[in-house]
Image (cartoon, rainbow, N blue to C red; front, side):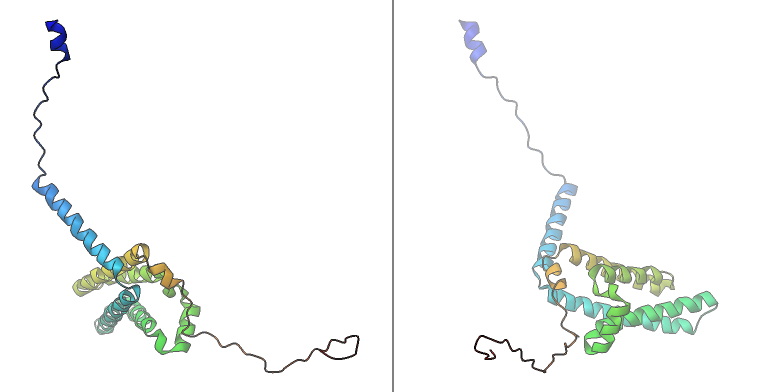
Length: 200
């Protein structure tokens, strides 16, 4: 009887000390919360406003990059350096002109015809990425510019893949330079003979 009672008694549970998160783990969790907060804040921002900020950033970096290329023309020491300076000027000028495309409808039409990739988020991000790699060959200031272009390209990719309103805006029809259809004003009368010989 005593053996049966002893066997039915529950065993005492061992005391388990709760594991306290280490300082490194706490910092990691806090960092993830901060990053998640900023991502949510960006996703809640109107995509048109973000595009406006990106346009200003593209114009600023393009102008600075172009000025750097012009100054490089006065300090070239080889044909290769000359070509790189020309590439810098042309690429930066194309980026700046693209952002002012709405001011010049004819220029926008030509740009879309010859540089259609600039009108897609992916194409524009890759274009800025190419400029970033080219910047790293332009000395100390070029490295600084390259880092800036890399961040700009990365932010473009982030918006393209993460912002919920991006694809809706990109799919919207472009009404900047919509061609005007010629409408014929000549009225054509069609007579259908009836049994009474009256045109209807």
